[in-house]
Length: 391
Image (cartoon, rainbow, N blue to C red; front, side, top):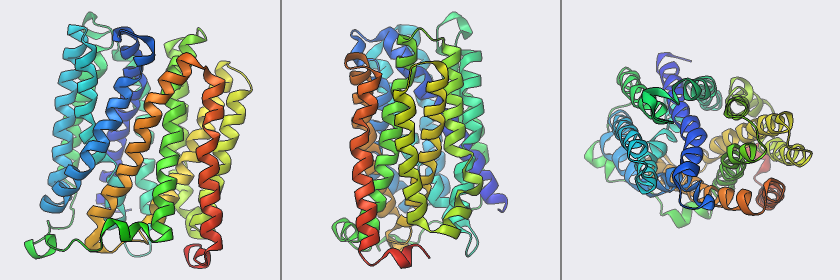
């Protein structure tokens, strides 16, 4: 780890503070402002829809201006969304709240590229660990997000206005952090003109296709269950403090393994770590179906977080083996679009299912995409590429 990677890990921490706070409060603010209960998670869905719609714009900005200026633009958008969030709470406007999260989606799409920037800034042979350790910076979000949300939720005498103000301040601080990271120089006009193979050809590579599917499902299942957790816990009569604690441990599970996931990938291979991530997702569902006490919510979300870390970190590592340097912006945009498109569906489904069918049916429904990833990993292992990818 060098100075640039440490600063990038800190930026990842601010990014996850934004994510955790948005997911923790937007469903609850949506429940207060939405005309119908099933619309409560539309603001959460807006966050990922905005990310999906922004992937192409983010890729173009990265390709044209380089990492640093593009990341700064994302943080400026985060600051704007924080101002809009406060305004939505003050005006009790549900449409404005949804629009706020759509705008914030641009920052969401930008932050998803921190892990790829880590691979580029890493010394030779350190790529897997760099991706893993920068993702571990999300631990800051695990601690700071719930803590700051609970401490600021009643600032200014307005319910949940304070967290948006807090996120605006963090956006400014994160801009300073990005300023001191020494990224590579912006591409020259000749380099920018090279775009590499078309997307269809990238997807014809088994490694790229499985990496995209696994990354999308890892985030989709995690988002399906995590976005519904605050609503499910409120339905069970549990407090917001309990919800914040569960989300905190969930995010710890997501990012604490980052200190050793890279080493596991290096030792046991990408596909093995991805397979363990799938098994942990199944364990999460079993625990969630065992009851609806605080302990069951906590342990299921903690295991889900660890499963996400293994599957997502390993699929990111797998994807970097499947595209050329001149294709990175295009390939990363496609991967992130797959993630956000899946999250869009699960964000809406989480609110609709948990408020109509209940927590148990929501968990059982998550088994199908987990099964699909399991089959894709078996297919990849049987395709003749497994020895090279496991090395």
